[in-house]
Length: 411
Image (cartoon, rainbow, N blue to C red; front, side, top):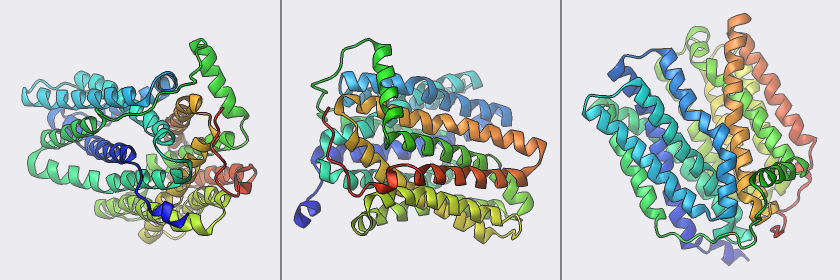
């Protein structure tokens, strides 16, 4: 068994993993370059950049489930290739508009929305592809490599984008993002991902309802969804006010704020790197608790800054916000892939995407309401309560009692 685990992962998975790295890099570069292009080229304000955020997140709420259904009825390959080509076309379209000096806010909103459709497709299709390409006993390894690539992109993407924008302008950064998306699509063009041989052919609404019912009735999947939702509400509650809180109440500078945000990516990388040795020494169920526990401890550290206003606590907090949840993502993604019947993997993955991204505007909205009514400090205090709630959900569930990764569900 030891030698088997040292064998390389299948070549088909390697292609999708490198494609995912390219996609994540392109996304992180674009997340920096597009708002900068809007500000520098169009002189827009905070309201307009907020509208861009809405345009880039709305597809996750309305299209994740349909994408999951398409994947369950066909193959993730079609969704992956179409999504990457769509992202390439929209990023390239922004570059062309900038070059022609015809860029407008309306065009950015439309292209941002359409490009986000591609991002939704990739987000649902990649985890749906893994169990079709990788043996059951290698799921943890495969998901660890995917998270390592994502974590590296979270660190490198914004740094690369900032450097390119400073040296050559936002349009050059968008060219790099476009090339990265095109490279990701090229890696997927000849990739063979098996179809679902036993795909259900009921009505669309019945299949969607069946997927939702399966998740909500499953003793392991239900707490995953609830925990992910609560975590992201708390995370974006902090994210929505942190920059102002750090500058006004912690005495941090823009440079130290950037270091704090970079600590999040560093925590992700280290967590992903340690996932394999931890999984060998820790019962599987305990691995699923480490993420929520790390999030709660991180929130406590951020809460301590209310009485000890120091940047060191903020750095440690963001590091743990990256470290713990990446362990959660690796372990629960592997568990989700193992307990979900192959004909339903797309719908179940799409529900995870909906719960994750759908919670973000709720958290940000809470930040707006709380800060406007009772002040920034209460946002931090409220986040501690939210992170306590997600830890309670996990501890009260069946997740901690799971000893090993269950045998792959086939029906």
